[in-house]
Length: 331
Image (cartoon, rainbow, N blue to C red):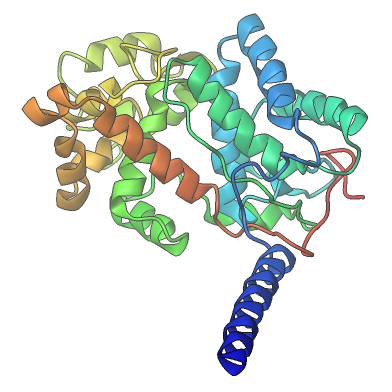
């Protein structure tokens, strides 16, 4: 009996030690987890939400800007806040990041967090959480954001060269998403984030006036929509004029942009091309029809899965990276 008790006690001890070691390795090696700051900075998410809410209340366009900032951060060196660095030849100066906004909102949140719990919350996590809050403030779904990212120590102009571009072919776009571990379904869902926000006429000039052999418009544009786009963005007009990416609901996060893409009302080329490719067209169509009308959360739950997945691209955790004191500067 004693030997049996010894064996059971030893086995339990080994199991406990093994679990403890695995847990410690997870922390040391670094894993994102929901509630990462629950003990070290319990008010972190509330502080970020408050800053984002105040910004969007003043200017509703900040919601789309903060969501776009998260995407641009993750697609270069991973979700590590590298896009926030402000210095000569830093990543944010790349033309592929043209028009990015919301930097001051991130810095405002960081300033408050440094007062509340110095050196604890990363800028990369602020960006990810601000994107979630922006979606919620646009009547979109709420979701839990795994946190624990650390900030990168590198930010180079040339690193943004491989960002998806508006004139890329659908195959090029898919390849760039695949390189980040994202599927065709993720591509469609993350593109649907364009349900909020605007674009500039600059990005429509080729599609409207120079699409084939030096002239002509993109034939995939719905004939009813073409005059509207041309009126908003005339040839040789002001290329800085902005128009909604989702003509029906610029400030509301919903799936109407997928119907627009299907019906030829997609504004930019990259969105419209989702319906040119059989695999991405199938994904677009899967969110329409009887099933999607009855089970509307289907789109929202799938979107949240994709953006959480994107938010884990190339993250730095554990002992890698740093926690910046100021988001625009390395420590």
